[in-house]
Image (tube, rainbow, N blue to C red; front, top):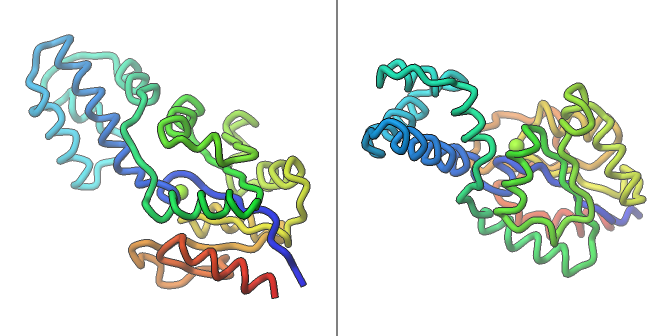
Length: 222
Ligand SMILES: [Mg+2]
């Protein structure tokens, strides 16, 4: 019999909707340009949102500057975006399950890739500190240790003092996050909120909703 002692979560799109973060950052960048150049907020913000919704990724600020005909340092806009304190909130089921797991005394860990300044602002804005026994922002270990590298997973388990088979990794990313967790022998749960996966390669369980974790913990435990 296995008892689940720890659950490790991914952050972006697992506990909250990353699109909310992106749009929150777009608002800050728009405010910055409005203050500096006197554009209308709505004009700038609408360009950013429209381009994003059309699928543009990575060159969004370059494209914006092209469209409004301004020469501005891209790095400054990226810094405004990455260091902003976001207006975001947990998914309802994420809020519920964190309260539930915390009250059950299950150890909780978080492993997240991404710029540390951004990730810590998200963690603060979502009020996650109080739930998690350990939070790893992988870029602080070195950029080569992003998921699925085994290092952050092994580090979390060591800090929590639990074995891989006593732990579950929960994420919206099969190929990256769950691949790494599976490779070291953790249980894996894929959060497929919008039924986008045809099949999963690394998930022991696929769920639409984090509330299903309650049942999974019991299932593994018998
Ligand atoms: Mg994610």
